[in-house]
Length: 248
Image 1 (cartoon, helix red, strand yellow):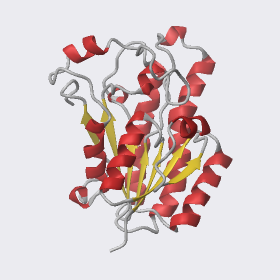
Image 2 (cartoon, helix red, strand yellow):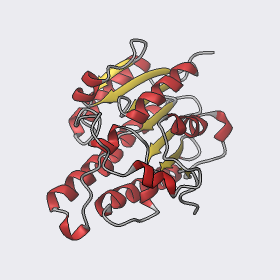
Image 3 (cartoon, helix red, strand yellow):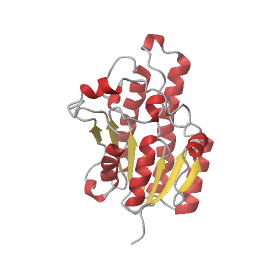
Image 4 (cartoon, one colour):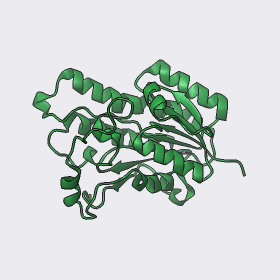
């Protein structure tokens, strides 16, 4: 049996790297997409295909997925693990530029990447697409207005794609709570990844029923479940992975 072909956008980030490792252990052929700076900071494993991409740019996304098509021909799985978060502000203090950058980094990138990925997934075997969104897309908190709006939009796009491409392609999402990665320090390739996080990790963990925030490996199992055959009758769903902090 041939290996399943998987592309991970944002594969050099904290969650992305764990996903790449988990996929390789499970026998996937993996293409890793990320920003040039992220690929330089955290090079993809030599057994993968590394592809530079700016997910908010039409031409860059087209080139990246053309490279995937040339290498794999089709995709059996796609994970969108890219994300962007500005400093915390009230909406009243959020500039138009900050709002636009957040929407581009999270919503436009999801639209462009999923549109390109679907075309290759349609040619794959039991294809599955997984968007990594956020609990903030449904569990609204102050000072995350632009980010929450972008993540809610990702959930809406996930549901729409699920309806429009059923039964051929399954489309689901994973919605983590805070995860202890460089994302909480400004982002992979965009910040000092050893700097202090933008949230009080201990305080956040104290109010979570499981008494800690997530680490990247906590997200791998739910994503792999949605990519695989065990979730074959699931589409249009969001799995909330937050230690019990949000229970819809």
